[in-house]
Amino acid sequence: MPSKTTPSDQALRLDNQLCFALYSASLAMTKLYKPLLDELGLTYPQYLALLVLWEQDGVSVSELGQRLNLDSGTLTPLLKRLEAAGFLSRLRDTEDERRVRVLLTVEGRALKAQAKRIPGCILRATHGDLAEVAVLTKQVQALRDQLLG
Image 1 (cartoon, rainbow, N blue to C red):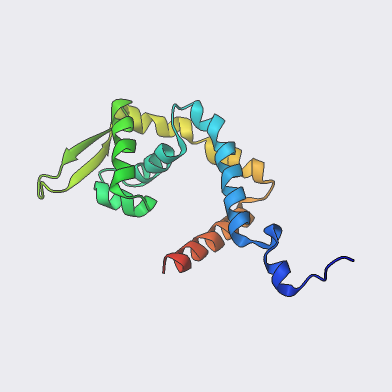
Image 2 (cartoon, rainbow, N blue to C red; image 1 turned 30 degrees about the horizontal axis):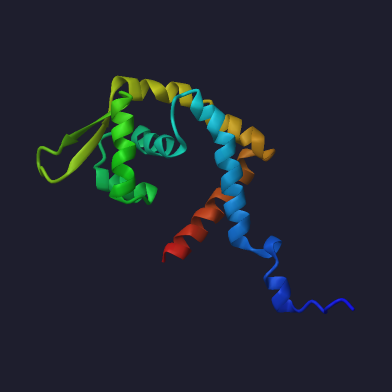
């Protein structure tokens, strides 16, 4: 005889888990980005760091870490690899030597022109329009902010 499904059983179904929907969507999104970023010689975290720098060049390492929600143990090796690739440099702040600023090189600024096609590729892959994707982005950001408290 089949067992009766209770509401708590339904709550434990994989397809009813917000965490799994977000996790699997994140994996799919990262998979979508990979070939686009491979053409630029970047990993996804490196691309995110460059997005911040293309918005505001010269931020401190700590400001960059805050924007990306990354600790220095993760961020420092990522920045070292971008520096070795010639896309940025790290310099001590002249006003506060404890602070390190991250500055784009000429090559790092030039990479922005090549990356400009990526958002359009991602938008096409969603099969949505810009307004729908913008609403979804705001909803996910609000959820993140609530979870981070």
